[in-house]
Image 1 (cartoon, rainbow, N blue to C red):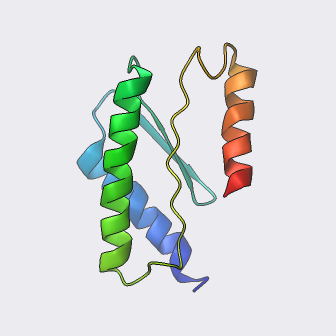
Image 2: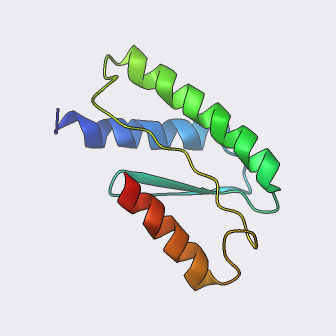
Length: 100
């Protein structure tokens, strides 16, 4: 339930930090939202990485016996396609957060 979700979010963040990201990537976690910045990655490559992350997270949540208790949404936002300024990109991220 409610108490387990933050710890699972933390565990997923740590999994992302240890197993998936490269040294040049940045990972930020806030309020059960994990944002991963892939610098210099084309949108198509970002989509492939997002799909891989989603599969790893789904496997982890299933292994923990939590499917149906935690929703995982993976989205790819790309500069300049999805926003040409910081404000536009932040607005796009905020709109995704509201969907969750």
